[in-house]
Image (tube, rainbow over all chains, first blue to last red; front, side, top):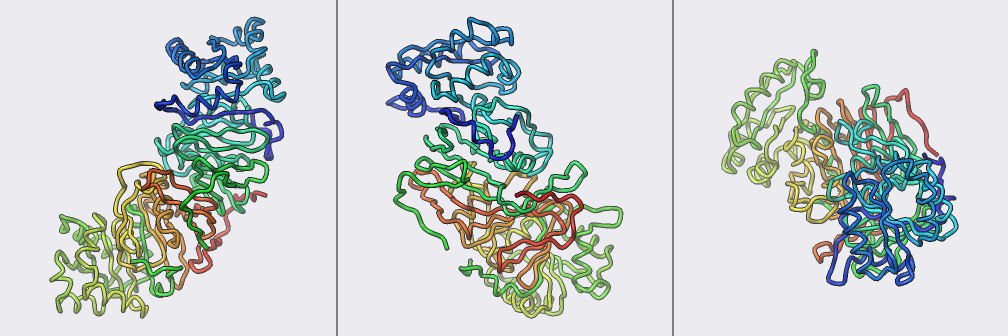
Length: 284
Length: 284
């Protein structure tokens, strides 16, 4: 659940949230390669969790193979299909010395339902807060990282309180609302609707083959697409009374579309550029 | 074409731009009723132009019937299918004493192609500037009113320079980019992309059964949906170099979602509320 306010205080650890469909290149997937580097490269001890999938085995095999090929020291799959498994000594032991955990795609509610509040949840938060582990995920494995989690689209389209369904997420990156496959599935309406409902949360829409690397209250954008930030903090009026049949109102929302090279200060709610683009034009 | 800057100086006349699908109610379509009232009610002399449609006759019959039923003094259809017709003495004469003209839906490029630069174009602008006529339109008839006109979606989705096609509009409401069927057809990505390409223009996304009534550098929102305003004026960085294969970047765009009861100052780029909502909550 959301911590309220900016909620960023707890996000000390390093989180990699990928918008799905991270592509392999001639030199391997740059995003997954970055994950392997961040977790220790040849000394990395990685755990793949495919809980989001109803058919985890082929997904586990694929990611173990890819991460191994990218040079990770050891990679193993950890099958977590029940809360009993997520509370077992064996599972806690399996995560006790991991330098990275990777959540695959599927259905984010499965992750929250199976892992939320379990010993796995506690161990990951403790090790994340201590800087001992990097928590990464793609697609559903990214969506579940926020405090309030976007579950699905609602019955309506457009910008409307009915166009998004939300629930409690895993809080690996509190203070935000993460949506993924963002450009590809036209989810700007949905994320804006979610931010109208939870204006204290910062909306992050992550394109496919694109990721945020978050650490110490900042995140960096990597990959081939962009991250769209929706900040309703500065909005003076937000009305979400559409449940009474009235249209939603939002006045003064701030929006950023940030490709690779941009970083974002989650505390100050402020973007900055790390790489100099060669073709910016300033607008008065 | 766009006038550059805010370009609002020429928008002295009264313009009604409807997002399409204006609904009839028990008491008739409230938006069309407003148009009839604005143009003189029982003294209104209205002209319906169905140039956007390839099959204008049924559309003409429908709107003549509806506007007449709503109490307009006289309503006639003016068939304009060629530039010859749009330059004829008879056509100019037909518009010389009209208090309102209504452009129906269809394809906005047909309106621009048939009417752009003709004597009809000149007469309408002259009478609009003099406050003698109200220019209204729905769907394509609204889209064509801006200086730079959104023609169609591009080949890409998402927020991208390739996700929208634009061309010269009729400039009845310069300084803006109008998109319609906005919530219903999920066009926020498209409008944001158009504003990235033309950041001096204010993006207006008009929902179905919703309209703006613009006059004297302000517009009012009426109808059952909302108008989404995208203002890139305050954005410090806009990069649209996606044609070089790089993702688009926009930093600091301002966005408003305004249902009925809101007005917007086109000069100051500032929304205000005319009706007091009973359920606003202020966000710090």
